Amino acid sequence: QVQLVESGGGLVQAGGSLRLSCAASGNIFSTQQMGWYRQAPGKQRELVATITSRGSTNYADSVKGRFTVSRDNAKNTVALQMSSLKPEDTAVYYCTAEIVPKGWYGGPVTAWGQGTQVTVSS
Image 1: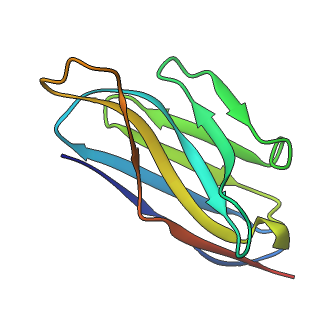
Image 2: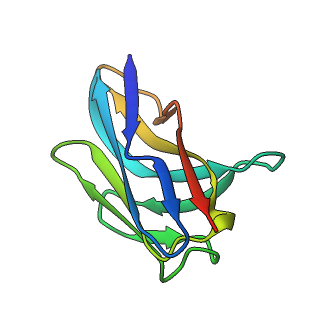
């Protein structure tokens, strides 16, 4: 069984910064792509940023230049540094990871965290 636990959400004023962290734990053989999605009220969940095990990154156009995703492969953690936050960044942020469990001979399985609220006030 695999668990993703996020931390670091909260309330911040527009223009401010927040750092989200996510740790994967459990029966893990390897972790492939990790990343962050978000879901605002009344909207669909959308990709924010992803990072491969080799460090290749991908960002939504709306966050390029403001957010930075990073990871620690040895610790199975991923972080999202958010700067120049805008009210439209307000959402629940979800950590995700493609994980190969120990003893699993199929493809990677996608795990999700429980979500952490980020609120940006104007």
